[in-house]
Amino acid sequence: METRTAFVMITGKPNVGKSTLINALAGEKIAIVSKRPQTTRNRITGVVTKGNDQYVFIDTPGLHRPRNLLGEYMMKAAGNASEDADIVLFVVEACSRLNPAERDALRKNCNSGAKVLLIINKVDTVNKGALAEFIYSISEEYDFHSIIPISALEKDGVDIIFEELEPLLVPSPHFFPDDMLTDQPERQLFAEIIREKVLRLTCDEVPHGVAVVIEEYKEEKDLLRVRAEIYCEKEAHKSILIGKNGSMLKKIGTYAREDAEKMLDIHVHLDLWVKVKENWRDRRTLLADFGYDGEE
Image (cartoon, rainbow, N blue to C red):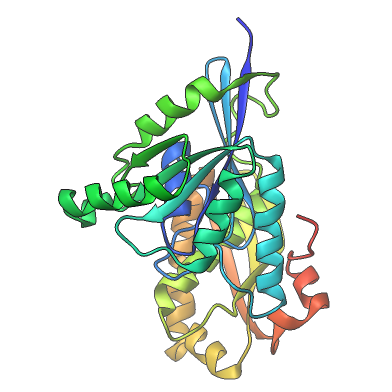
């Protein structure tokens, strides 16, 4: 039996649940999740192989107006991903008014020739009457291949997405090994796990000016030794990240280590440091040093 493949881009504005969706589709956590918008900075590929069929999902940074060089990099990553995709999962929040960036992106995607599936997320938070009106209104404006209401958090409707995608697969060799889940290197996954804990634990105290760089990643028999540096933009943020007597940094490290051990199935020794690099999001050399080099 011949093999088939589909490249599927996941896009939408920040905080609509794109990373939660790609994790639900993959069946494993491959993208960090936070209530704060613009959590995803790079394009993340999730690979799902079902027998002879392979689905390649590309998660992208949320659509927004860039305010610094990092924001420009994120939008370039999202734009480049659209060139690789045959199918678009455009994620919107149930009954939420579309902003200009969403409307512009919807028009472009629907006119691009790609199959656009509208994914209406967080349907568990709205009543059915309002949802029905929302679906009718948006379907009158745009030409979608299909409209799928889901709750990515509850994994409700994920099976329907696969049912809708299956007829869109095309004959093709598989581009990734059948047992591969993501193209992200382990070092990058580990750095993202640490950044997720920073975002979750510091809430609104520390803004998005945080980057994580893995300086040492060494496996010794049944132990993985990792040294990571957390970069922030102000001394005040450094104090918050460290906490009184190092309490916050210890908490970040503990939660990150526990997640990493589950994901990588190995004991981890994690050494965390916090450093300040002012305005790093607007400094090209530092963006490159932190892995945002514009080569996406």
